[in-house]
Length: 126
Image (cartoon, rainbow, N blue to C red; front, side, top):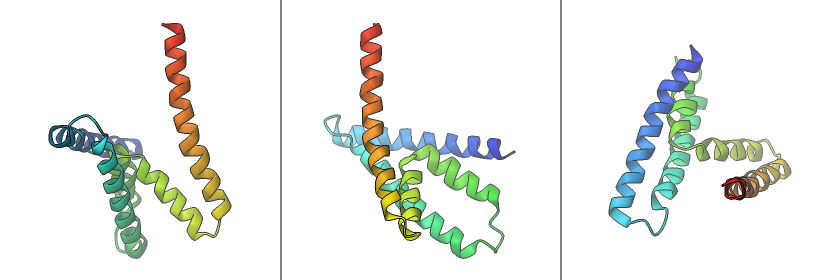
């Protein structure tokens, strides 16, 4: 059942992401990735609100299913950058700044390198 809950939430989040990207393209044009930027910032803000709310209200009827649907599903489908940012915040709040810095550097630089590696592989094979 947890997979179905996440699946349904991710569909909603993905559809919302597409809507924001489409609106940003219409309003601002294709010269700068405003849609992705707005999605990442908004998703991170919403993740902060949700994580804070769930931390305060954990014992008041908020189930694991609700957390999976909203955080992993809806916000994860909207932007995984929100999950990444929450991971960094948790590491920093635990006092694990070196781990947080390593996580940020490896994730961001590794992700960019992985995109270039994928592009190079396709171009080599094509």
